[in-house]
Amino acid sequence: MFKKSFVILAVLAIAAMMFAACAPAAPAEEEVLENEAMEETVSGDVLVDGSSTVYPITVAVAEEFAAVYPDVRVSVGLSGTGGGFKKFCIGETDISDASRPIKDSEAEICAENGIEWTEFMVATDGLTVMVNPENDWLTELTPVQIGEILGANSTVTTWSDIDPTYPDETITFFIPDPDSGTRDYMIEVVEDFVGDEDLRQDENTTFSSDDNVLLDGIANELYSFGFFGYAYYINNTDKVQAVAIVNEAGDAVLPSDETVQSGDYNPLARSLFIYGNNASIASKPQVAEFLKFYLSEAGAPAIMSDVGYSMPPDGIYETLNANLSAILGE
Figure 1 (cartoon, rainbow, N blue to C red):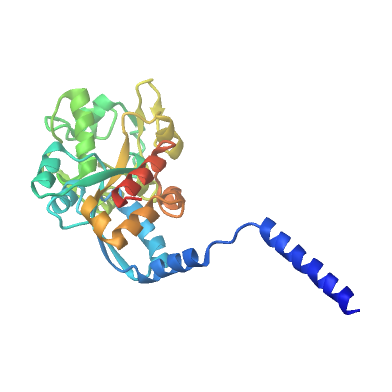
Figure 2 (cartoon, rainbow, N blue to C red):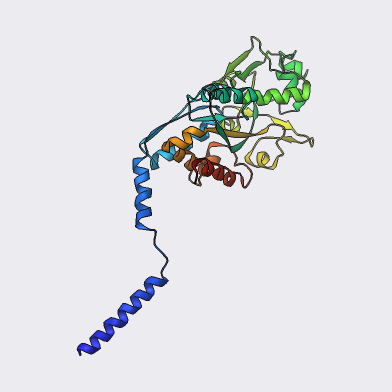
C-alpha cells in the first residue's frame, strides 16, 4: 500500500514539474517589484511651457500620467511657442511645446547656454481660419485671399473689401501674438502667396498667445475673423465657424482629422512638436518617465483624437522612442 502511494506521488510530482516547464514564464518577481518601486519613488517637478496649440495635448497626457506617478508635479504653461523657447533656451524649463520647428536664432541661444535638446514630433494640426457662426457670407478662401486679408500690407478693412456682395462692415481681427508659433506658420503662408513678411497690425486687430482669448473674441463679434489650431475649433463648433480653404488641387476643403492626415487640407496642415532638454531627460527621472509615458500607447496616442489633433505619420513614434532611449543610454 505504501509503495503504491509512493508511486502515485512520484507520478504527480513529475507531472507538476512538466507542467511548470511548459507553462508561460511569469514576470520575474524582481522585475515586477522594480517597476512598482519606480512608480512609487519617482517624484519631483516637470516644467513645461510654450505653444497654446500643443497645450491641450500636453495637459491631457499630464493628467493621465498623474494617475501612474502621483508624486510627480507636471506644470504646463502656455506663453506661446516663442515665449516657451525663451525660457527653454536658458534652462528654465525641461520641455517646450512648439507649433513650429525651433528657429536658428533660438537654437543659437540654446547653444550659448549649453542647452542640448531633442525634437519630438507628436501630432499634426490643421490651422483653422474662423468666423462668427452667424456669418453666412464667407464660405471659402484661397491662400492668396488669406494673404491679402492678413498680410502686413493689407488694405482690407471691411468685409466688402473682400467681395462687394459682403456686408460693408469693419472686420475685427483676432490674431495670435508675436510669440505664437501659429502666427509664425501663417506668416510663412502669407509670404509664400503675397510676399508680406508679417501680419497686419492695426487698431482693429487683437493679439493674444492664448487661443481661448481669440476664440471668445470671434464667438462674440459678428464681423470677426481669426485663426488658430484645429483643436480649439473642433471643441467649440457651437461658438465659431470654420472657413474652407481652396487647396492646390482647386478644392475647397474644411479641416478634419481625415483631410489633415491625407494632405488635402493644404497649405494649412502642419506638424506639432515638443522639445526636451537632454540634460533634464538624463538627470531627472521624473522628466524621463513623463516623456516615456507621453510617447507610449497610454500617452499621446490615447488622447489625440479626444483633444482634436491627428497622429503623425506611421513610424514616427517608434523613431522618437528610439531617440529617447539613446539619450537615456538604454
